[in-house]
Image (cartoon, rainbow, N blue to C red; front, side, top):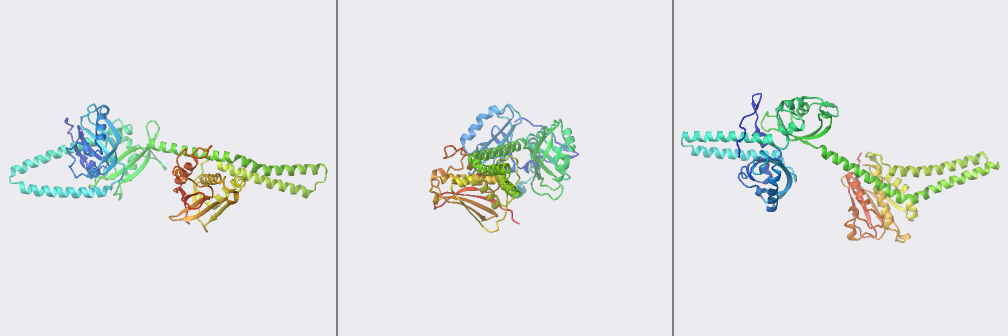
Length: 541
């Protein structure tokens, strides 16, 4: 291993405690040479179930779940070391044999050599460990170790010369350890910033400097004080002011928050921050910065795609209902035409009275209102305008849905039976999306009863209270039922038993219900037919 810069770094006369910062890091950190562990921090020891120092000197093979995984990563080192960085996700193994998944991020201190010293950061992505409990146990182990070593020194210090030699050796080890922590802090592949107890930044690593486009450390400190770069709901502020809010006061545990950062080019980035207090009294806090802009934009694109898919599904449903709707609209319009024709004839022959005209106009207005209501329901159902989640009377929404589907119900010769518990509370939902779920389930029920004799067709809809402030909706038909092999795949995308079906309806319905905090499932039944049930969270008064 090559020698590292041994200069100490201080700020305003204060020597920065690198070892304390890294021992309190929220991620596992290790120092590796030629795939052997030279040093591991307390978090990494805890993650893998080893006591302090037990991993030092061992091959990293002990951390891999399989020999194949260890060898596969090794084959990549020669290539990735040229770039100085390597990140991957891998299944790892604890000391007790339990496996878990980790994200590993490595940086070679001397890029270009696979056997050069490297700094690795490991993040357990299967569970979060309680930092305070880990620190308590680490402190207990440290106290026990110090006590044991003190007793050993007292027994073995037989001469003053030996005591002096040991003290000199300990001082040398402390200096080397401090330099090791300093090197790790500067080369961590995470943006890190440290503040004192008053919230003033005392140290910032190179990764964070690059993230905020700082030319130097002094320039980075200037950017922290710029009150136009951090965007908040109340306007703009400086990052220094924002950090002080999360240092001062009685904050004792881990704190997480986010903010928007305006770059030098005017672009806005979303930054997630994890803050942890330094455990020694009066030392301030450490802040880890992660740019989550790409993840948030991807989530927003996925949400928009889901909305577009749901809208397309509603259009498809309306296409299936178009013929019946056209017939339903034709009845009031034909009636209006008949009244107009009759009125014209009577007016031409002079036999129409004012009462006759008034009656005809009233009849025409009534039929036009009926046609307008049909079109209003259709327009609301296929609308793509965003609808917020609001308090909704599910019984009223069900009645509106049945009115929309009246032509299909009449054509199928089915009269729905609605049963509802008394005094049902409202639910908070997007009414258009929940109506889409109801229409899908009702259309499926009508399709399932096509071969059922007319006098045996039953369509039952139940609204009932559930536990944990939920309201359940059950749609049951008396069709032929669903075979077990088909039931197992009902909610898979593109799976359908209909000749002209796309296999997306039930999958979209499940996504809609789950986005409201509920669930959609097929209900097992001993009776003939099929039952689907979905739940929604209620709004208790």
